[in-house]
Image (cartoon, rainbow, N blue to C red):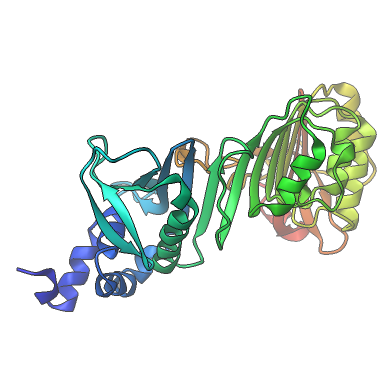
Length: 363
């Protein structure tokens, strides 16, 4: 018996228990089916947090991430499903069939290694194939979902698609031209996360879109790189590894944040370097740093980690926790930032709460 012959409520009940990946494939078979899935699954699709494209060379994977609850403990967790693969490998030796995806006929084959078809295309059709699939996903799941493209390097294929965020690893060698990188930053989709080894930030314009990435992780930045970065970064989260930093750099950064002059979007900053007693005393004893009595327990700061949007994000979904008796207050809106120096690590976590609201969370 055809599914369409069932009453609406019966059809909806069936679709409510179908995996996201199967809903995606069903939506490809007809406009009527896609329309029904969109209308009947509106509430369920609101739990989808992102669609992730990952891969390199000739193979790409599309993952869906969504919020779900453990049926026994009712604890919320983030689930992931691989919903399709794509390849521009030679597939002439495989039997294939065609589906119309957003007005473009795309070839699909049934591989042995996956429980669903794989899109296959000639390398010259790569851009148009990704555009068709992306437009279908965008129409099916909506523009409130994050669509993230993860690439192992900036010289790999990166499509220009609407609503697409980019996560990129950059490991420049000595011959790499900074102006080539800056041209890449300024021509890329919106930058979600950059994982980059030290480059000459002195040569990157303060107005570069590099500094506007939501999240940046820098490996081995050298003086005066840290200070330059802190002055220009306009994103939400940053982590700097294996770096040298002066007490004056940290004091200047906190003062600029406290005055509302800079870092208005910042949520989390971590600098892992060669900090010692001089840094700790110099930073935490600054006259604008406030402290909570040692007998009281401060709240712990942690936010969703933007630096690891891989499908396996369930391993570390949040930033490292900050539990500190020291904090500063922003003059423009009275919001609080926790400040911590423990061993070689400086951490700075911005709260949504005002000082009054923050102190109510102290136990």
